[in-house]
Length: 241
Image (cartoon, rainbow, N blue to C red; front, side):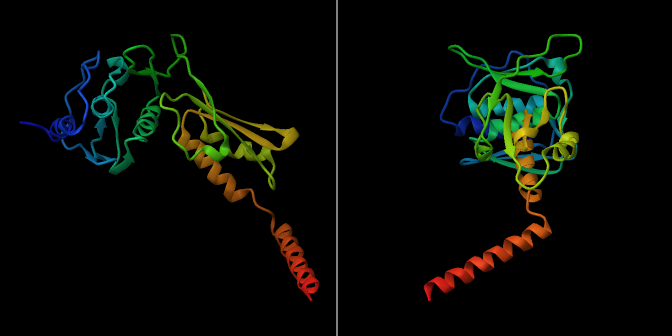
């Protein structure tokens, strides 16, 4: 009997205008029942049931959608699942970013190999007992955070200039959001700014949104600003007369 996931992947293979890549070097486990991955034009929907979606099945679907082989160590994925209820809706161009975010929750990092037959590799960020994996450094301007990140991921760093709040106290507030193994948030006192590094673009966007909400004038400053604007308006009116 064909499971829904296998049926969906078969349909994807027929619909995509490309040849299927070779199977990953590590054989995937059997797909669980109940998970379905839908493709509708450029929109991709990953549906999560209560028992979750196995990471190996997610990577198998990613391989079919992107045409790029995915390699990993079976022991590092074991029986790990993406657990949740509802849909993850994304586009083909943003699929890699979504996959990176889901794997990062399990301490896994992806990067692309170079050469005539590039592959997407999945490695563990667990540094205990062996060398730490190489992580590519990527500098992103804060005003470009909404754009899709580079295809092969890395450790993203950006800066935020603060105008109305203190960078040191803001750093202390945001610190619990970051994993100190790779991620960091630091303040630059000379210019009252924050430098934030994370492997999650979603996390950087969340920090940007929070800063936009809290880096505003105080009540007294707002009142003074409104009075100045009112006086400027009056002066402009008098000038016109």
